[in-house]
Length: 409
Ligand code: GLU
Image (tube, rainbow, N blue to C red; front, side):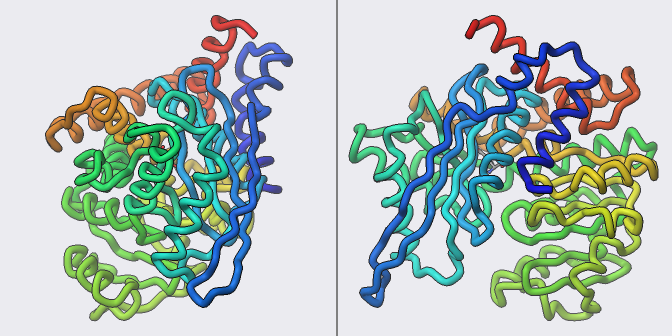
């Protein structure tokens, strides 16, 4: 099953529990626009390299389209289509006045120099600047991109359209970015983890957590949950995984990652195989790396009682069914990792109003929005006897469907 088919399957499960006309269903599934462009640059050695660039604009019934830009070798039209659709449901679940989009370049950023990354980013903007904009489609960071990438996009877009900081979010704080954006996805994950644990009659203090992925999302999640009293018993990144039963010293681990580039080799820990990481004993499992990591073959062996999806699409529909059957609660990506796009929204608002918020205000408003969104989804799940994922899709599809019908075709 491809990523887009997986997202459609989750959509379909929710739709079956709703009163939705088939014509509206088709309208909501099909992306509004898909752009595929050539991104050619001169490499540092003088050779020419050509990459594929994508931007899929899924839906704009509730507002300008919003979503990240991913630089990764696996990026293709199907994956971007799936991720764009997830953004539509994500912005709707947390009630942001946005639709959904996603983009990317099929490349391996680890093999490109900073100057080469700058060139492919500016080239992508040259190719798509006519279809993005502060009121139409607002990119942001995702896997393989960061605040520096967003700064280049802001600069390049402004060459065509005049000074436009609100065309992109996740910018550096010194260049129209928002305080609190960097940690926002991790903070949102921390908040929903605590809320879901409370609903299970558990406390975050002492909860044993595994985090897969130690990039922006995974590292902030581990840091914040550790700060809240959880025990981070295992973590992994692209190079390997480590475990320590009585809990990792996360601040020391962050320093280790900063100096060595990986969690591997952190003193006083045992190393763990990549596929073992997800099935080690724990209370909470946070997949915060690639999509499709929880699948038919390993879902039966997951030992967590709570899975909180930091990544987009980490659980296949087959695995989701197995986890549900086994009574394992899954907080779905479109709710769990929505902290990032929520603070992106705050950044956009600040840019449009030419002012900046204190970090405490950002964190406070994020906390309120995540708590309210979690409670809405949890209540729908409880009252209708469905999983949190199906409930999140029901809430989102209801909102997008309503906006679509009210606006008219
Ligand atoms: N890439 C992030 C996501 O998947 C953030 C998107 C945004 O801030 O627009 O939610």
